[in-house]
Image (cartoon, rainbow, N blue to C red; front, top):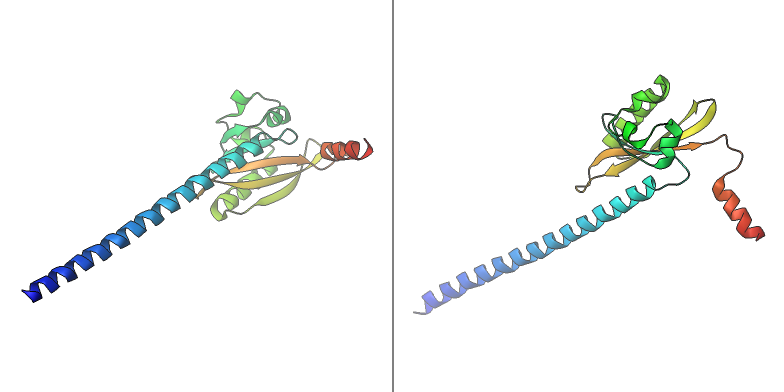
Length: 168
């Protein structure tokens, strides 16, 4: 019968269309997953580059102020070894005003996903504390990287390298 054949063709068309939509959605989901994985990998590399900073102290801090990772310069800055710093809180090593500033800015950085910074005198020297949001694999900010740069230095190691290459 012609009407049965027509209904069968319509059903087949609907199933084919549904299957094509499903396949397109699956391909898009796979592409999105690949992009998310690539972004997570780039973020890990960026975090690694922060922690490998050979000039400035860098601390990786959780929202509650626990130290999750540090670079060697941070250990020298605080005058503690890495084992003493990991899982301790920033309250243990900084003066109260610095700790208050850090806590306020860490919460701001993690909640809003924006960079923050403040200046502070620490051990009679002027420092700038830069706080950088650290994203997890889901794109959520769960940690902050703190980079501390002394502002009272008269010579910048990077400037010295540039000057030497110009003069050389």
